[in-house]
Length: 190
Image 1 (cartoon, rainbow, N blue to C red):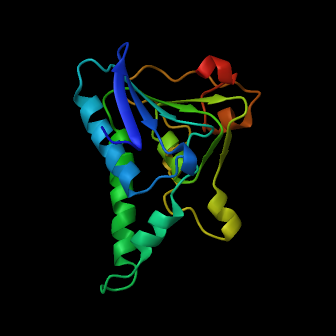
Image 2 (cartoon, rainbow, N blue to C red):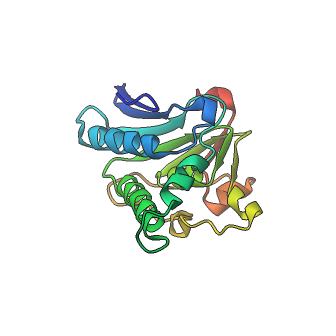
């Protein structure tokens, strides 16, 4: 099992845990590789009827690891930007695979969930967040346009083969925007 991404099946639930709490579960190549393996194994497991994604430690995911972003942005002798576009295509491929799984996917969000971490959460059919969860796209502060933003994932219609979406709590703007389906005290999410 990959150290930075752990997965198991418990009580019919395939649980995927981002396990880089010292790096706020920032997503790098190793995490992407681990997610790919976890999704492949759990999507084909007859024991896992639903898949739950969560983060270890105080946050769901701070987004892309800037060291990894620097790595895939580094020129390699080909025309400028080719390697970066390939890296982004790899990330898109994984997110699309999760988004189109036949099994329902739930993201259990606590603490900060931003950038690529938010992208990952948006692939889920249901997003359950603690009352103190903070969702955002911090790259905007740096003047960067979120390259991977999945606009079509906000408030999508239910996927065929999955149960109907939970009604939104109209008192919460995140729920109104479709960024999360339910707001719960952190103790309930554990």
